[in-house]
Image (cartoon, rainbow, N blue to C red; front, side, top):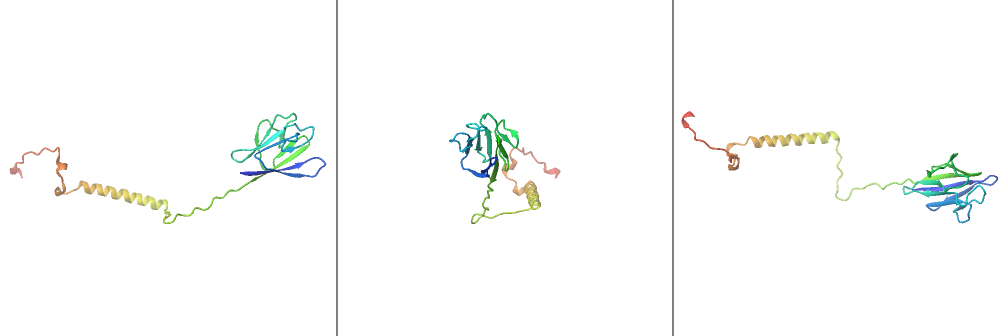
Length: 168
């Protein structure tokens, strides 16, 4: 979220600071505007400053007669305001001072009884290789079982023929 302050400069007068306190801030010639600028070049509802959902500030000309300049370019659609942007309405200058809050998140602390495990990529690779090798070795051992370890289920579907002892 960012805060917005305006520095107002009028010809022949001292500079004035204005804090923008609401999320929508209307500038115009009418007294009900948030900032009333009672000059002929200012429309009744001239422009609006609005804080977006993302917390940025946006400026929009409200269809004023004389238009609004942002950094010496005529506003045609809403634009994002940046720090030190210059807003001009006739001979009136407003300097935008956008102050962005820096949000810091508290450091994460491990819960009681929890452990943080840090391993290098090489250590993880070696463990995966070892696990894979152990798995293959177990599979080979199962394939080399001795005859006493053969179960009747292993023999299902095998036809037993007659053995001629004379050939042995």
